[in-house]
Length: 349
Image 1 (cartoon, rainbow, N blue to C red):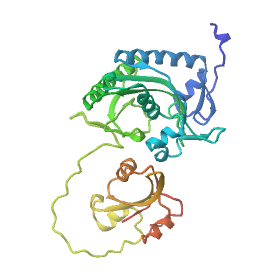
Image 2: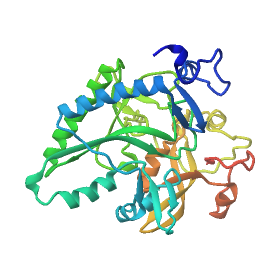
Image 3: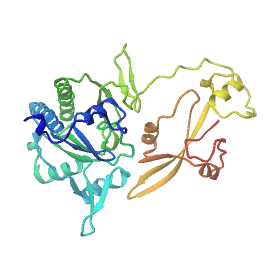
Image 4: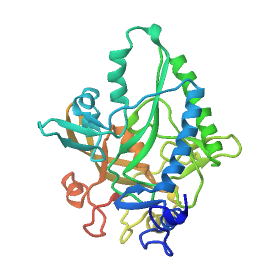
């Protein structure tokens, strides 16, 4: 096909909303066009590229025994209510009602649908193990779509589901996928690393993310050259430097005028920040059966460290966390530090 006949056109300059280089190039070369925030049309060149990637995905999945299927993009809410995730997942789930006033869900993942298929199709353990996968459109109503295709609301995802009789079978499938994904990225020319990650709404005991290191990324990774430990900061474990033994001193109240930060407090008291503590106040949305309950969360961490919201949410079983407001802090008898009425994770010492 001649370039003059290509649907779409190249652009001399990138649109002003395209901030990162990859987004700019995709727009200028006529690969993608935006329809809304985090929603794109893929033009002919992009579609050809995606088909080549999908071909690699299918090849590597079939090498480990995967069988491709296709599952609906619209689900009846009953299957999500049955697992409880209808109540546990927040506003990122696309919910709507059909013309018969039944609750429906736009697919963001397909565990519920696979489970429904399995209970209908698998009658005996002798039919296991099995591995199914599909490549399909997903919808997650991300509040902060950014950087072109880096963070979108509608996207194409390859997801696979292994069906095993025991944990040993699951571990075998996990190892097979672990290597298959490295093979996929290698064939696509991407040098990635695998790091431990939060299991998120999927749940489970273990998860890895495959990360391509780039300055425009949003995640922080913890990497150790000596022992080989790799993890996303959201789930990384570390060993704090133990404090030197000290003689206990009597407790006393000390006025700390105009100390609005840990740094100011430490300087005022002549102490390292590691010898201070800070309290952070949140309101957590916690599922309790079919109901959602808001609970006030009071977390205390060492003064020289930052709170990890993912770890806090996992510790208290929260679906969502938001900073407590000044009025909510006062309502429990605490005194928020000065700094305006804008909601934020208030800290006091």
